Image 1: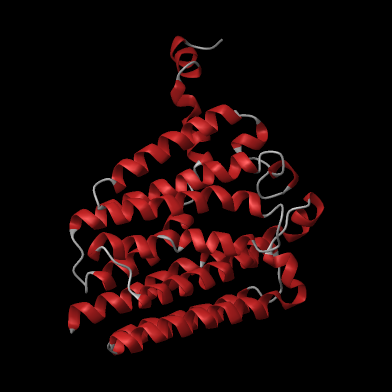
Image 2: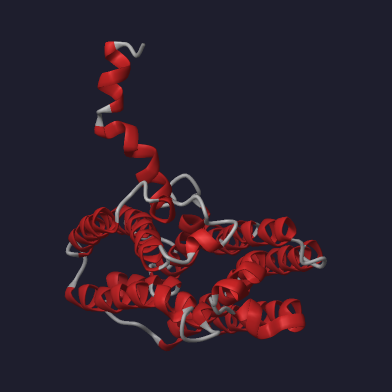
Length: 297
């Protein structure tokens, strides 16, 4: 027979907390890392290595909120598809542990908190934040209509870059768009690896992705996309006359990308997922190069 304490806990809202944590993917922070590193690249470059604590706090918290809210919107959009995919079949919306109305309420609250954060920047950054919101809301529905949803995801993940430059200097220089394009291309590459995990299930469910579009050329395209990202970042370093530390970070990224392609060569689900997760270290390596450049020069 259940004790009074057990009965109280079973009726407590806290018993559903793990479901909401899973809904926002807070138990799997890889998406936060992948969104955060480019934002930090942009902040450090825009502020020439000396971003204010205020802006660091705003962008770190903004990344956490944006990624969490994006996951909620994504799961709401995919609630009728996730049950057909092995990796996502146990998500809270797919199983009914959280209702669609509850998910929308959570997304609205997160969006409000993110908007409050951006109010502490400037008008230009606030205006740009609207574009980020539209991209985040658009992405989940692209996989139904195009084989290139990763392009929209990349555009959304890279949107923190013009926002960071706007927040620091109230302008977005041309070279900032090179960083934007590098991030977009890199995001397409690692999300193609991610999509390779679900490719067979996605085909059955009618979900589209670059992994399906590229077919047998998937790993070659991942390599090309990473190469384009590298070239754009090299152009940034060349234009801003960065030191050897920056290029050491890029070289480390190349080594990590090469390992990922080797890891995913069999196209095994677990291997592709491991290669995807490894991109956190790519972002960290590039940031380390930037940090050392500004700290030691």
